[in-house]
Length: 161
Image (cartoon, rainbow, N blue to C red; front, side, top):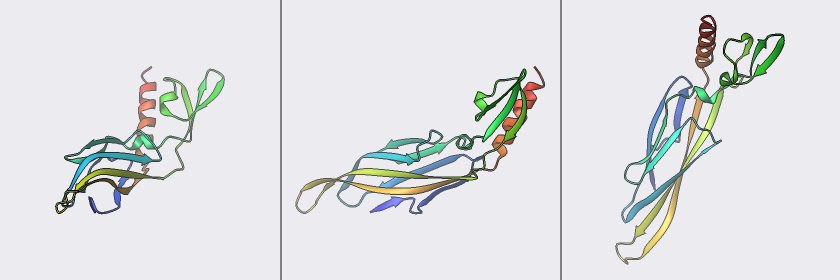
């Protein structure tokens, strides 16, 4: 059984980077790949995975910064002091008075790929279907630049309202 890449550490990246990886099962004599299935744990939506029996599995991510969210963003709306945990939930033009980036500096994910194999024995002609599975680790480290950029963007937008 041969998978490519052979290294179990598929991704080691900062959250300011992109990801573009190709994975595949290399069939042995008599084997043909009939399908691929995949699963990322813990589940998330930053990675995009596409499968093709001819080329394998393609893993991409345009931005890994979506994996990390602030612990909190505190803002003032009139006399009310409010708190949200995502930039998308922060209303424009509010008085942001406290920003606390995540304490989580690293996230690890496991990508598990299953190849469904159809095998024909060249000597006997007997056929058999089975699966081959491989897992890879994906480690993403938070470099805080995405939070800093969003903070700057928020203040720049607020200064023009």
